[in-house]
Length: 183
Image (cartoon, rainbow, N blue to C red):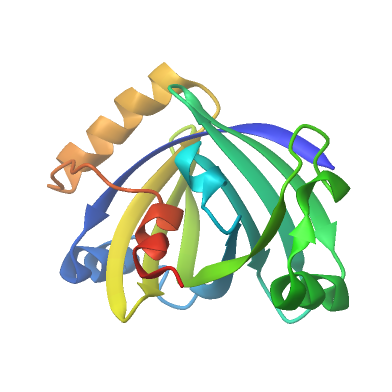
C-alpha cells in the first residue's frame, strides 16, 4: 500500500477552453482514458463522511483501489494495486474495506462510474491535468493543478487562471458529480 497527501486546485472550464488548452500545451495526442468505479455502503456512509473509495482502471491490466479522505489542505490517499480479475470481482460483488485499509471497515458495493479522458503536463512546480469527464449522460471539463506545497500551488494556480482568462468556479469532486446518478 502507498500513502500520500494530494494537494490540488481545480475549476470547471468550458469545452472551448479545454480544447484551447490542449492546443496551447500541444497535448491533443496524449489524452488517455481512465475509468473510476466508485463504491459506498448501501446507505452511503462514506459519501456522508466525505470519504471517496474507488477503483481506477487506467488500461486493460492496470487497476488500483484508492481510499481518499478530505481535509482543508488536501486529500489523504491510500492506494493498493489490484490484479484485473480481483478488480473485476470487487466491481461485480463488492468487498470488505478492511481487506485493504486498516482504518475503515465497511462492506461496499459498486455504485457509479465516471469515465475521464485525461492529459497531464508539468507546469511550474506541479502537474497540470486537463479532464473531460463523462457520467450520467453528462460531459464536463475541468483543469486540476497538483502540487507538493499548498501555498505555492495556490499562487501558481491563480497565475495560471489569470494567464488563460479562466474564472475560478466552485467545483465538486468527480465522485460527487458521479454520485448525482447513483443507483
